[in-house]
Image 1 (cartoon, rainbow, N blue to C red):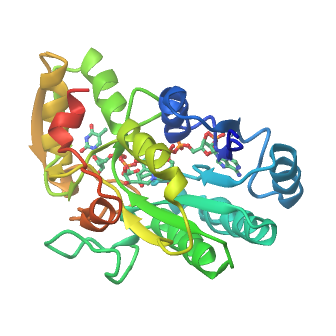
Image 2 (image 1 turned 180 degrees about the vertical axis):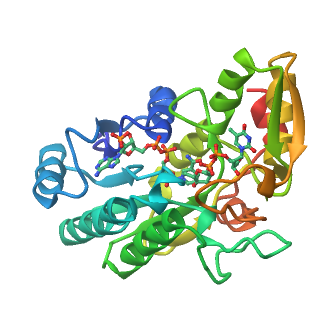
Length: 283
Ligand SMILES: NC(=O)C1=CN([C@@H]2O[C@H](COP(=O)(O)OP(=O)(O)OC[C@H]3O[C@@H](n4cnc5c(N)ncnc54)[C@H](OP(=O)(O)O)[C@@H]3O)[C@@H](O)[C@H]2O)C=CC1
Ligand SMILES: Cc1cn([C@H]2C[C@H](O)[C@@H](COP(=O)(O)OP(=O)(O)O[C@H]3O[C@@H](C)C(=O)[C@@H](O)[C@H]3O)O2)c(=O)[nH]c1=O
């Protein structure tokens, strides 16, 4: 007898990661339901309740979030309403209905003062309103009595979808001969399609025993300057990229100086090899 297909609900369907999941989903035998903010607002419990029942969800992948790092410094209440209270609503209802949850968090929960890749067990100390709101969401996930959950921290996501640094650099390069890019913030550029593939390839393994926090980033590390140079090279563009310090490129939110995530736990647990960011950038 054929086993019943698992029903997988993806929130935040208008966003980058959700579109990447859509991009790779054809290879996977699940019943997928993509809901954008209009169809499912995670700050509205009635809307979550209705959609969870309608779709008979077994697993929810929550990609819905407030992701505007600088604006969050002034729209802090809105960031918390989504990244904390919205996530808490979703986790509570999933727990009540026995639904497993995959939630995405960020390298910006760390203070950036380390000089070696952060482990899942390292203390968090976000320095931005966005980071604090995401950390509050992490705690809500861990406090909900979910049957199983993965809290996946990732970083510097880019793809052909949505708004991201990769696309910003390509856009700026259309009109500029020179771009100043910070060379004193180090992280791990991560192809969002790689994360989408990891999630779908391992979805059936999600259970109580392997529930917890995982770091998923492409391997290696780079400054935003290194990443911008690689983007310009890959696209054979002529724009010159000039290294600058964070002081020369002031932003409302102070990004971590160093936020590389150690990805060995996820590779070991799921026997999964994550490629280097330079290889991922080649497509
Ligand atoms: N982008 C990155 O570099 C990184 C992202 N992350 C995390 O990964 C996850 C996915 O990020 P990404 O896809 O890039 O982000 P996007 O901003 O591209 O997508 C998030 C989506 O969530 C939607 N959304 C906002 N509020 C609500 C709400 N109340 N209910 C339902 N949907 C809502 C947004 O809609 P609208 O546009 O209408 O607001 C948007 O479509 C997020 O949790 C993010 O914090 C972690 C590390 C790096
Ligand atoms: C566009 C641009 C940015 N920068 C700097 C500003 C900033 O310090 C750094 C990154 O810029 P962005 O604002 O594009 O990226 P930012 O919004 O900080 O990206 C973050 O998004 C959230 C959602 C996350 O969770 C993080 O992991 C991370 O990906 O590069 C330059 O120096 N020159 C430039 O031309």
